[in-house]
Image (cartoon, rainbow, N blue to C red):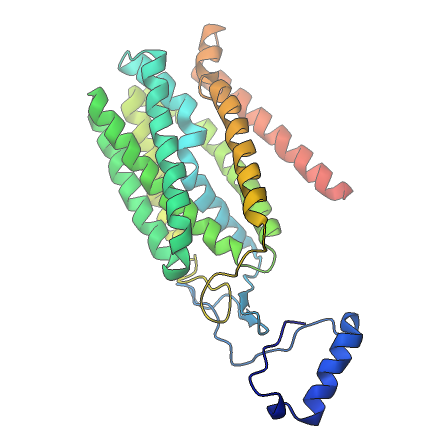
Amino acid sequence: MGDYTLEDPGQLGEKGITLLRFEACAPHLLASPPIDHTAQAPQFSGGTISGMSGNRGQSTLTVTPLIIFVVGVAILNGNLGVYAVPFQIGAWMDGLHFSASQSGLLGTVEIAAMSITAILVAPLMPRRSPASVAMAGAIVAIVAQLVTASIDQYALLAIARGVVGLGSGLVFASVVAAVAVTRDPDRLMGLGLAVMNLLFMVVFVLIPYALLWHLHRGLFVALAALMIVSIPAFRLLPDRVVADEHGGVRTPPVGVGFHVAVHFTAIVLLNAGLGALWGFVERVGVQIGLTDKQWARFLLNNTSRNIRKCCKLRSQR
């Protein structure tokens, strides 16, 4: 049961006082909170997906195959710079003859811009429409991807990649905000990540053909096209996110900030180490004689193996 604030205990009446006494003595017998039939459902662009649950006002996004797919597509676009960075580094080194450090720095600019944007925008999402923010971010990123494909100057490329990161950060913040206020965010996010990895398996197959078509220019046109076809999915994200009945964000437990800081630091260090290896995995493949298609197939097989392992672990739980 939820907590109650009584402005006038006399308004409860004898039955209400009896109920509160019963709750205090045997809360485990009351399995569900009282239902507030007047609570307003969160509105989605494609219609109302779910209602509000009880007095807590927490949205309950129904986990359907369509919604899981939408979440996976949004995560894919939000993390596109992270997963595509090996292709980007190789394309710049081969197409524009940049050094490894120059190419790596361009990738770092995009990922840093995405991360910082997502962090800064996250607190504002309760007052914004995730669907609108995601579509706006995608449009910004698409334009910057096409600009990247059309220029060769390093300084301008750095600016363009920063703008791509900004747009991707808006998309990522939107999908995280939409998932976070659902009844079972862990399950929905986990399924969305699985879909994202399946989609990246398709991307791994297609990108080498874009590189063969026009090296770096073909790559960034392909990335822009991927984001363009994803925009319709963003329309199914909610028009608003509500974490409580007053339309605000639930207050986190006391002391949670320290745990969040520790977790955040650990994730940063982990990804810094992994990123140093992941960013140049394509170059390693080239040095040992693999073609773009061969090492992309290797990544495809590795990703599918990881998905199978996750499914096996889930079935054992």
